[in-house]
Length: 346
Image 1 (cartoon, rainbow, N blue to C red):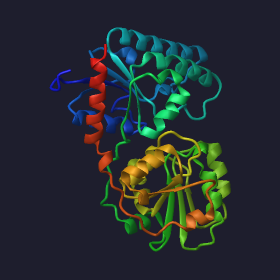
Image 2 (image 1 turned 90 degrees about the vertical axis):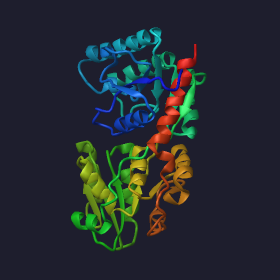
Image 3 (image 1 turned 180 degrees about the vertical axis):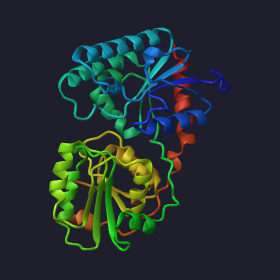
Image 4 (image 1 turned 90 degrees about the horizontal axis):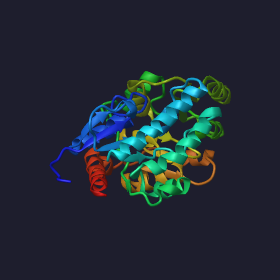
């Protein structure tokens, strides 16, 4: 493919997707590399020519609800559409964000099995956000082992570095001199907030504060509230944070603690680093690779369960993460070259 030809990428979902900022950031990375973006809400409604269909989260087919029959029909029609688009010569790329959707139950679990069985045969390329996570994808989806693959780093998030730490703490009612640990974003059981609260409560320190804030289901919010009750050092806000509030809470923290138990990639980790905040997290493939890119002092890894000693050993300050490898221009250029290689394949 000639390098000056606009490469047209259909992103499903695209930059208008409000649930996850990654979609818009990735679109900007491709635009910076000279690609033209088609924002797809539904590939079955594609009305203009594209070269590549890039899928972010195929589980979005399960998010819309409806009766069992409606959900099943939606999945079957979407898979059939992908097959038709591929026969028309459109290359299909699956960026595997998760090995499987979190907390699937009932009919959605059955429908996901259909998706994970059929989708690998329909894609021309697979992408992950870390070289070390690609083997896990191959283990979970053996049919993808011979599919062309590309890894690109998770791009950094736009960050407001004008937010001063002391001002952010004053706004949130936190002591200026405290060591503030924070866990922010969508709170789900697999992310380990319970273990963090339990370890923090066992930390014999009046200097430390723990802030846990983000959207979660009411039942889980009640569980976290019960665990945190009686410890005045813990602030729990079990509600959705808008972008300004998330930035404010991040700016107030010394360390972002992410005790995730089982995951493939983490936008929360990259968000913290984008705001210049170091991260404490268990040793995992994605975290290891990310630490190599941004500096190992900015991501402290631990083995085994989280303990009070691990929290107490965190230094008051850590070097500012080096985000150059997470720049959208680098990522967009790598992704475009991969798409072009797929276009040249017969």
